[in-house]
Length: 507
Image 1 (cartoon, rainbow, N blue to C red):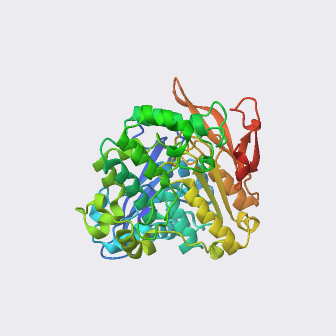
Image 2: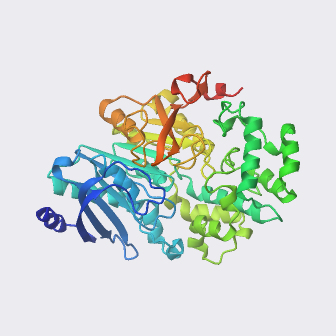
Image 3: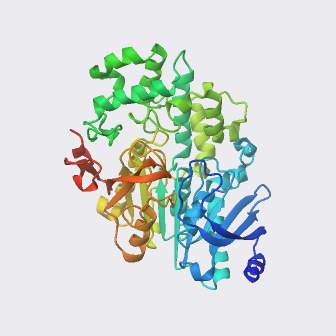
């Protein structure tokens, strides 16, 4: 053990230094773990911390978990972060080490305060793509050095910002990974953060327009009651399975008018109308990103969180403060002039919207994306616009599905949690069966290593038991353009669903 620690400390690292190596014994869960979740046993491993300095502005932390040589599965796993990062996401590391991977994570070169990046363009590049690529290169080098042979396969798994990291890797560095799992990818970041501002402005730009949890819950229930069957939900679903079936602004639906008058203030009515219409350029009239999804009103970072004016702005408007400063007035954000300036300055760094994935495809890479039907912060409909552009670039759906597949999970929120599906294997919870149907990373491994592409994934829903969360049921999702249509019987039995094309799911 001590011999291995000394060996790791001698790893030759360019433009950086190893700051700590320690042996971790019997680690089971990330700390803190306020929900008392049951994680697959991470076992014992070497915890390695490195600081990389590719530029004078850069301080990129990379952490690796290395299993003992006899416990190593022969593979490397890069894991994603979230939001503006700023610290190591050790949950991803625990998930990887519990599977036997040499596992890496990075803070993406940022700090816990996003405003520390103001005026530091090299740090923006670190955050946008450089930190993830360097984590991957150095991580695989250390893996090869420690075990005496290169990893047989390399994978990446992440959601939200982590999903963007995965997209950026496939587009910018197609040689880095054999397979990538991205949940709810924040790939169109600058327009996405403008979407946050748009929705926030609607709630705070008029009187009495914000929402309490109770108000949001009642309104969501009214939405589900009217649109449930239209959107592929069964009678027990408290969510819209496929809200793409809503083809109108809900505020115009005659069947909702009574609820509108009973539940909403004048400010809330006006705000919701603009939120459901979606953000648009005031000069061109163009909707530059997909609108908010009906049925996601109660989810994380939705109406209630957005109603906390200062906290939401601090947490989610940071890319624009990086270029305009911490005192920028976001109530005056111009969705023509300011948006275009931000796109010009930041999109080449922070976005991962390139639809030409030929280099990743040609070297055999596989990309698996999972989205949620009640994701309030990254509507899956926006991702589908990207997916259809890739299909056009590839010359057809079947050609695209050969290396790039999308699954839409009913009732799944933003990367984890939700009213329906709550997990797809990305957290390493012991309650999720570790097989290619319930676990997205297992599905990716089978696709890459055995050539068996996933046709169906089963998302897990939990119930609260005496010892914490317990597996309750699984809900199926099929590879797009197929979705799951309920056929009758127990709605918690995955066999009571069949695949139909997306447009056929709506009644």
